[in-house]
Length: 157
Image 1 (spheres, one colour):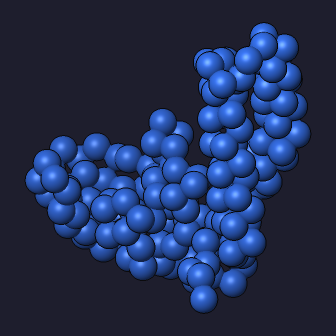
Image 2 (cartoon, one colour):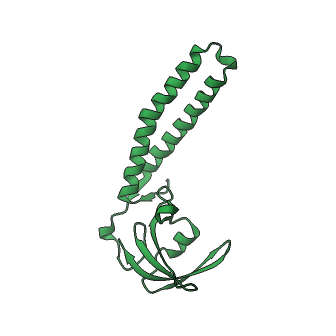
Image 3 (cartoon, helix red, strand yellow):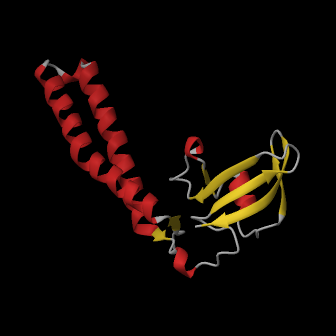
């Protein structure tokens, strides 16, 4: 049995939109590129055709991957999750124990992670270490560059 893919509602919808784009617009673009390449003549030595076929394979692989993730996807319903612990979908306000600087992260699935938006994956070292922790808890997180020390100041949904 395959592992479940935990997603926020927002992340699930984004994956559905990506899949729709790959199946629609992207497939049409690739089909047009293949047709244009065929019109250039002999496809056995046609770099444009080879490139379009490669793009087609990559696109179809990505479609299969997204369909699989959506099929295994389990949307996290934060109504049924304890609000006193950090889980997927929770927004954590952390205080760096060394510098005193506050940092805010939202714990999300790997597919939703976007560090620039403060969304970190639960499979990352930091995200994984924060899972299940409570407000007020001090967390030491080993990363390749050393150890991070955070105090969980607040947990919200």
